[in-house]
Every structure is written in structure tokens, then in C-alpha cells.
Image 1 (cartoon, rainbow, N blue to C red):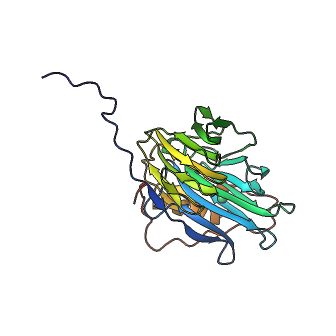
Image 2: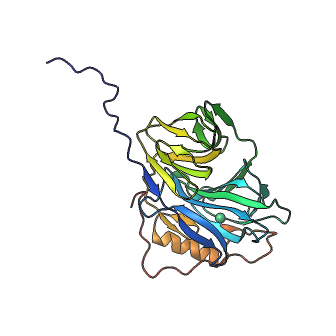
Image 3: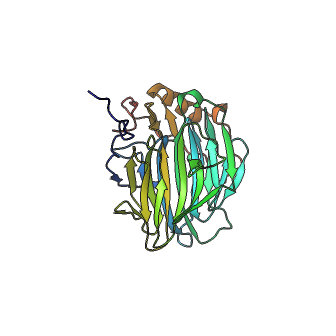
Length: 317
Ligand code: MN
């Protein structure tokens, strides 16, 4: 019996089927608050790589709404990634940072063991606000690291046939963002050229998802509108992207995150008792979360703990 030919396909599984993850409408700050569409965590799928939270909002006409007003609140065990499509948001945190962010810029806040911050539409603002708020779960080794904040105003851009990509986190098409991340992942904003056929390079060991920011990008044969998150699975070396009208999309991906998490309110932890402690530290004003100065309003109170114990969950339900 002769030996088998070395087959480069051996060991590569077929790409997983795509899943359209519908978003849930959420009002931040109560029923009359700021409306967002939450696609992560989703009922079927809680994470994409280490990306564990995705709220998209707008376009909001700020002539008809007061915009964003999120008072001081705590975070643990995650990084917040703030990305705007239109408008401005002003960030303040307990490390003393006060930073306005605009489209194309990244605010990256690493909560580590604890930080607090506020986010608001500044008094002087343009008429429309649109953006996404993402969280990245920190892996066990660094989840209790000291908190940090970075503003990246000049992220690298890749221009390829049919699209340009601004690399927010990680490496895409050979170009690496200066933003510090702690697991292998990618976040990029892609602008597709009308009537072009683009081939987006992917890593087979990453799982990916795509969110339309505007227009109607066609991914493989799925026409995507702003709203749902299209999960692409893993095992792919590329995916086709096309558009007839100008379109922008957010590409998220990463190595599947295998640690089980408890996500409750603004905390990412590993078990119920950690959440109880985090909640108590915030409610008791311990030094863990510091203090946000300059926000015109009270800090947000933690909601009551649920009656049953919180259960750690994996990335897939
Ligand atoms: Mn926050």
C-alpha cells in the first residue's frame, strides 16, 4: 500500500454555516433612554473571539434627543472599545482621563480589576450620533491587571482591491493596530467600493462576524443591513464582500475564547461570588473603582442581584 499524497486540505474542516444573529432593542437608562441594538451576547452565541458585547446605536438625530448621557459606572475584567460612525462622545474616567472621541478614532479602556467612567454627548456637537460600543473579555492571566485608558487618533489603513480597512484592534491584511489587546483578535472598519468584488483575508483559526454600519454589503450571498450580526464561523481563509451602493461594515473576529464567564451588569467575572464582591465594592464606594470627576449627574446604582446564583457560561449556548 503506497503512502497517501500529502494533501493540504487534510485537517482543514469545511467553513461553518453562517448564522444571522438578530439584535435585541435595549433602552440605556430606562424606557425613555438612549436606544441601542444589542447583538452580543446573543441567545445562541455569546461571543465572537474575545468580543463579548456589541451595542449599535443611531443614526440618532440630536435635535430630537439629548443624545448619550451615561453617568459614572464601573467595569471589571474587560476592555471597552468605543467606535463612532458619526458624531462625538465625551469620555471621563476614574484615572483622570477626559477625552472626546470622533469617527475613525478609538477609545480603548482596559478595566482590569476595576475602573469607572462616564460617557456623554458633548454640549457642542454635530447633528447626528451613530456608533458601536464593544467589550472584549480579558483572559484569566490579565483580568485583574491595573486599569488603563488609551485614545488612538491615527489608526492604520489598508487599501486593497475593492475596499479600504481601518484596523481598530489586532492585525488585518498584514497591518497591525497600535491598540493593546490580550488575546488574538481583529476589529476593523471596512469601506467597500461600489460595484467592486472584494476578497477579505481571514484566518482559519479565528471565528468571525460582520455588522453592517451603513449601506447593504453582500457577504458571500447574504445581503446585510444595519441591525443583525452575521456570524461567519471559523475555518475560512477568505470571504467575498461586494456592494452596489457605498457600504461600511465592522469585521470582528478572534480565536474562540474558551474560558467560561459570568457577565452581569457592567462586570465580567468567573463566578457568582466575584460578582457579589464587585457589586458591593461599587455600592460601598470602595477605592476599587475610583471616582469620575466632572460629570454633571450621579453615578449609576448597581441593580439588585438576581435571586438565583449566576452561572458561568461558555461562548455558545
Ligand atoms: Mn461603560
